Length: 494
Image (cartoon, rainbow, N blue to C red; front, top):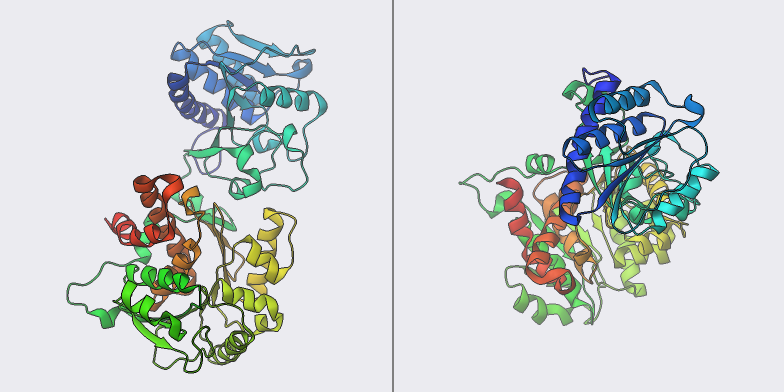
């Protein structure tokens, strides 16, 4: 295979050996019987090589190799079959040439789906469709090779899920696929891990991709080590416009996260009702207020030479606040000053859509699905929402942090960076405010908006995981996430 220095057969054997190791680990835990379904193509060849690895471990796999009429199998699959029979004999190996009797599968089995992976882009045919349904209904644990059979690599709305393998674990061949990162496919893909396809660094660099995975080593390069002679003046000053009567918690969380990001100074601009809250709960931050209202923000003006600006957490959508946001965006746009917009800033824009045209180039917006749909129209699903986000980011030349289980950072050039960190424990009020402060804090330190967004979501996810280890997935609060930001950064840097 190109870029690996190995033939296709050698590559299938190597991937099968890795898959066998992963499956063997699962079998050691559950004590199940391994049942493998191998299709006629490359995915089938890898499944047969997986069976050979299990047989070598004395795990007695039962394998069904689909070679309809004895002529449908591709050379790689035929070679894998011959290698298996030569090494392991025919016991437990069934080659399906014609009529196929559905085997008995139960919760006592572990099924390896090596039917088609990403080789078939459309819906599966009738017989294979029936087999997939039987596997899904069996209660068996399921490991999919490459992709759950029936699921296109790039995802596709409108497919019937019961006609697609529902994997507990998907073993990606070399790299994850776009479909892995859609919330709609979570029950199909399950957990996933990538097998080493043996691509050289040069071959990997030649791959033309529009989708990327944020990695720890990349974030480490973004967050440069600190010089021992530095001072707070070297790490920037962020101002956060946030809070309203009854929503000062959002301002507090964003401010606390910005301080934990390593930002030198943080000012929170909030209505006067927030003075005691902010000065008591976050004494390290500066406080400034709108001059003529106790309950909401009435002006968004930069009174100092701040290094970065974040707007939105908990600030409400009063008419006077929307007016203030409009005035601010027009000035920021004229000065080409990127800003971070989240939460109620986005809701204000949804209420007055003309404000979209004033968002400065390279600004960062951080909507969850509901906020995104309020701004850009209701989307039928996660795939459509991502496609719309790419369109909007390219048109307005902004960065969209589309929040979710695998948060997507959509850049103005159309490239998308998915975040691999995170946990269901982050599904609690206020964690988005924490992310806003974190990204703003990174931007204040001189990190470019697109890199600040990528580093921010990665660190945010790690902080959530660390909080979960202490409090459990049910007990995490947004404050716990903010308090773990420093530990998360330290883990990345060291």
